[in-house]
Amino acid sequence: MPWLEKDKLLFVHVPRCSGTSLMKHNKVPEKAIEDKTSLKKFWLKTFFRRYALLEQSNFPVWTESNAACLFIFVIGSFLLQIQDIDYRALAISMMCGSLIFSVFLTFVFVAPTICRIRPIRRWYLVFVHYILCRWMECLEYITGCNKHGYLNHLTAKKMLDYGYVSTEVMSTVPSLAIVRNPYARMVSLYMYNRFGPAEPFKHFVRTWYNCTFKAYRETGEMEDWYTPCHAIPQFEYTHDNGGKNQLVKSIVKQEQLKYLKYVKNDNTSFSDDSSSDGGDNIQDPKNFTTIRDLPDRVRDALLGMPHENMRKKSAPWYDYYDQETLNMVYEMYHKDFEVFNYSPKLDQRPDLQLPDALSLQTAHSP
Image (cartoon, rainbow, N blue to C red; front, side, top):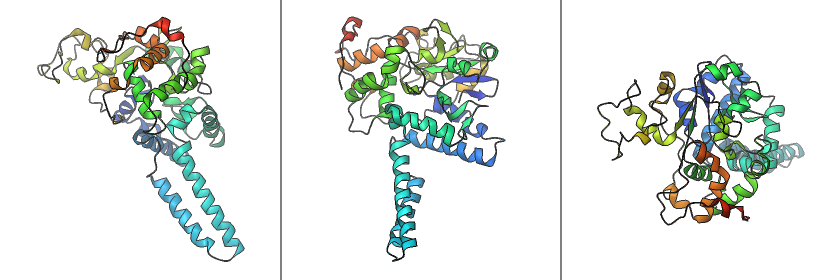
């Protein structure tokens, strides 16, 4: 989804930071399929339908595709009762084919499996790029999927390196990214990528640290072939040179989006109805540091954006943590705290100590 408005507003979509809601709000899927061939439209629509489906469930069972597979399986079962070698071969093919197709759509081509099981992710990248002949990519809007992974989740540097955006465009066109507290984001990653509700948060964080995040932790590798886009630290999406060179012009904290409607267009004062927002002190400067000086085009794109891709949680996000998981998350994403000025202290949990960098060198086993 990087182009919210073609050649006018570039969006760098950090996973699990409200980017999907912004994409829908600005009608990117509809724009991406305009003026495409029928075959290209079909596969792009398929991509966006699957993307929307996986927002609702990690392993989607009750789907139209599975209903069609069940229908084909039942027909095959009836044909199997006919004592004819031709019908028997057809019946077995229908039953096996529908079963395999259903398993792949429900358990293999889904976010948790693609993200956390490297061989499956690599096979998926090869499949969508070479076997599907790149029908699921839209380079005009830099969305869809190819061998580089999910194009809508490319970092700013990757867009430059792959030639999807020129250096001149990156330096002149307004650009936007949304980031969030790394602790809260990890809980969101857990809800989206867990292997079902039975997987505890602690197990998820341990396997994320030891497996999913390993290539980046050891070598800084960010190619999807090694490190899934969900595991990459947020600062890598917006900066290069280890966080020293900011590539994205407007970086907005997700926590401050709710205050955007109270800031007038002159970006210096508040509207008359800014006195009520759940008891928060609207005029506290720390609540609008990243939304105070937004360009009009960026501000207009953000205003009215719904939050549609939010998973239901059994408890507030900060209650998922204990000292071990807090330490591991801080070790993995400590640079995000520094670059985006987030406090490493979990204020909502006074029972947890501030992560100690010296204690984070111990091994963590699932």
